[in-house]
Amino acid sequence: MTASSIASATGRVCATCALLLCMPALARLSEPSNICFGQASDVDGLALTSGAVIARVNGIECARGSTGRLLADSVNFSLRIPLDDGADLRFIPTAARSGEQLELSLLCNGDEIEVTGIVPRIAEPGALLHADIQAVPEPGAALATAVSCALLAIRRRTRTWSTVPANSDGAWS
Image (cartoon, rainbow, N blue to C red; front, side, top):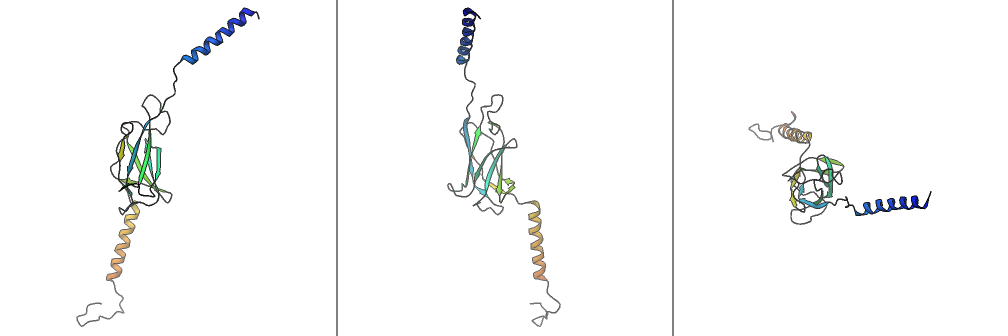
């Protein structure tokens, strides 16, 4: 190798490095988060004192927060929902985009429970989203409660045959 070929190769390497340094950075930053807050209640409408609220967008969990303490009047949960700028691919898979529907659920004793309540869509960066949610009873739970109440009512109306009427008109006591 001659001195001129070494100088030429070195020059090309330096030129390539200079081009790479001058290119604009392609790193993307997240948008300011949406904050979702509200009251999470059990099936009886009482504020939850334990458990967690899970937020999903497009079926992917994007945030989770506890319901253990009262943060303000009628607010026992607060979630920070990361936002994406909407350009091509998401910068992280759990980032939401403005206009997407937020889905909330409750996590109690290791079981995920559906909720009812008005859950807003993801809004512009930095927005506050208010959502009061209540746990939906399991389909079998309502039936089991109804059957238990019916059996209790039947038991109260039914007397054993060995019971003798207490008064003269034959009414059961």
